[in-house]
Length: 293
Length: 190
Image 1 (cartoon, rainbow over the protein chains, first blue to last red):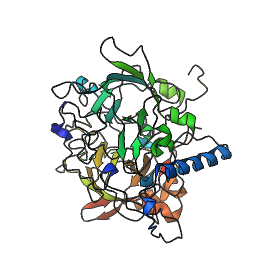
Image 2 (cartoon, helix red, strand yellow):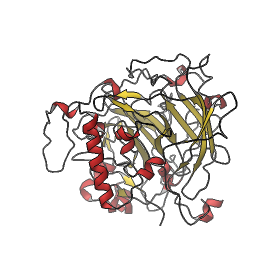
Image 3 (tube, chains in turn yellow, green):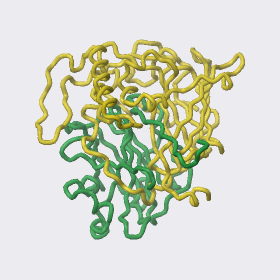
Image 4 (tube, helix red, strand yellow):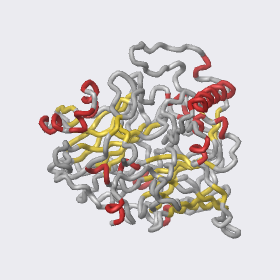
């Protein structure tokens, strides 16, 4: 796979994103019936880590006191500043899935070549960093494997730098690594990538903000309502407690579902370390009879 | 997993972040059919934040039936054969938050239900994906009779129905604010 053919994102200009620029200071979320005002406090964009920590702790205390288990990220999570104007303020409207929502797009070997699962062989040389294998199964809520379905990943290189043109972190680009991979799950729902362990990197959510090392995962199920994108993390990362994106999943057990396990059975002799991470999609709406067909 | 009566808890989502540009967009991802297709229509719009400003770093996906109401089982959404309809489209928005899909009007899939295009919204700053439906303003009777739309509060129903202009259909996505799009939760099977 090459990045150039069909993957060129030169037409995608993403101003004011991520690390490339600060969120404009003091932009407050919409509140029904309240005219948005401008918060000119200079620390709106330059909060300290201590301030972010305090906000995270406050939300956590409210959550603990409420005693109601959450399994998904909050959409409205102020410590992640970019969420302020981008979270819906109204509850999701319940809809019984119908029509195309009860099936999913089909991907196959026409879409994904076998070499795309190895992010270390795509660019004419060995990338720098810790070579590793990441594998696991994609399951639905009933434990059934999601078979022959697309899994896409993207990540920073070993130095914490993305190939993306808007990533301005002054860490080296690796000419042998773009950090993009794809595969299809097998008949058992198993995916498997060979890659390089990504580095942590700074971003501009607040002063001295750092993301824990992670790999982005994009997943499809057997029904379109199962579509999801998430991030896989590595065990024991010291940045977990400080990261408002990870902490937006307020329940600690739910957060830990995003952390891969080191698995020596996956590690390859004199070649690569190994991590295992299973992914569970939401439930399907088919009856058990239909699902067995 | 050994107890089949206890569902597994779903893995939580996370934001798509800002750096998906090399990974997810594909050539022709916005073309479910070529513009030269006799039934081709344009479905376009803008993604807005809670201040009404365009969101320049969103990614949208659509999934729909063909003109006869059939869901495709053809592969090839990432490497397209323009003669084969897969029903799936993916496009990043442009710097002004705008997107355009070229597709066909979906046929009815379910008796008594108005056809729609399923849409998924991802963006930096959006901590989990959002799902919605795009209904097309073609058969007012079918829209009026649709039981799902009837259950959406009347003052918000219009956010799920595209408008029409001389270039095709327009469906804006408002993540927050006065005309916030109705986003869907599908819950668990009863």
